[in-house]
Image (cartoon, rainbow over all chains, first blue to last red; front, top):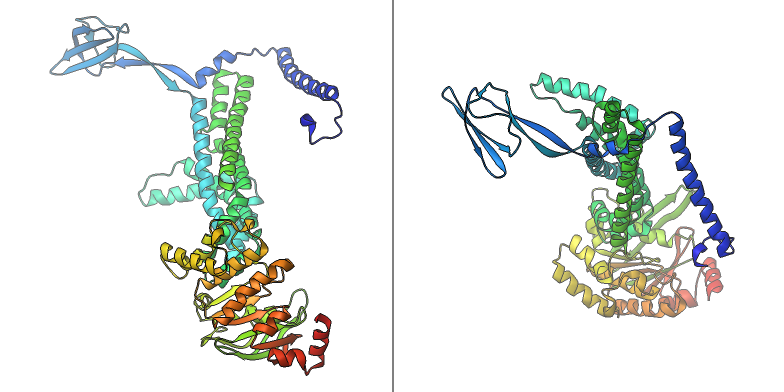
Length: 335
Length: 243
């Protein structure tokens, strides 16, 4: 039976479709139940207000920078050019046609509105989504580098390397990411920025510490993934490579890591996806990634239901499309 | 060529065992030595101590004048002079047959890619599988894999070849093809140490046979004397069990 190859108990087509129906009814009742429950608390859904947080039309006013008379107004097909001449200075402003607010001979003070134009701008949610993606990518790239070395150190015979790696991994995995972010920002951040200020340098923005927290957090998990991947390669591979005269580094570079990478790739991809979700904690140190952006919009718009669902959906879009892409990469590199 | 002096080696896991007990032997250039003995007698350990895959605890080992057990010796340089063939082949599964044979030439011997490829093709022809150059090891039979492993070791132009039970993991019908390659090698004057259960090969190819038991070389001699007139009781018992 093609439709239930993994489940031999599903005997007939009718039973199968009956349970598919049960699933659909269950899902519908969950969603409609939620909807009607919100109606009971007099929540008014206003989905139409959400798109403005993705893209919106910004109203930009054009103001005069000098004082003087409007000397001439040149009306062209699509734009209007306003010439202002004041006490020994001239200025020229180009406005979109139809937005003109002044007439010839008007006396203009600096800061007076001459006209306006409209411009499409990227909204705060999309900005936050982009920042989330950026910090996650930078975090995982640095995390993989840290994790690679920590993983190699973890299986080293040298106790200094080995115990450093164990301490690092246990400390990071044993404490909440939120606490680590606080430590990175409020402890390490304060120390570093105070020292920089003492030397006359500028301050590092919070995002540096946020990314560092994510990278070191991911690095600990990557280290364990790398360790398991390397240890899963048969000892005979190392023996063969070393017996040919290869050094430790040559063996790793040419024999062990290329094989280990194929096994490491799927859990590494999973780590990346969970890092995207973990980056939602960065809002706590004033990094306006997706979650923080949503929180800001909620406080101004008072539409929490739509926005939090939208926020979850955006994370889902990010993680799901990423997992599809990584699966595609995996198929391409491994076969 | 190879000089082993009073070498001992202990294993502590799972329990303390003296894997090699005060072993001494000398092997000359061009000699073919086959090491036989029951399992756990220390044959493989002795072989693996020669290129320091296992570190011996006591004694001295010299290969071509190089002090193997001295920590200051550049062991990678010494290993490049000793080819090793394993029971489980240990080909690199992510590389093609050709790449398996060229990798160490380029990485260790710093040969050019073209030179390495030429050498590899010549060796693959020698072991009889030039047509499998661009195939991955999982597409080869056990016998073919082991022949590639021999070619891989030979590509380094070693002075000694160490064989650690090269035919034990093979199906019976494939043993012959591997032994043929080894026999050719022996005839060309390669110094070889072979840990093996192939008594026919030992009789035909070996200059000397070592019989090991409980970490010691109990008896050594030409194949003729060792197989036909063993002096020690343990040798007699072992031969009677396997022949």
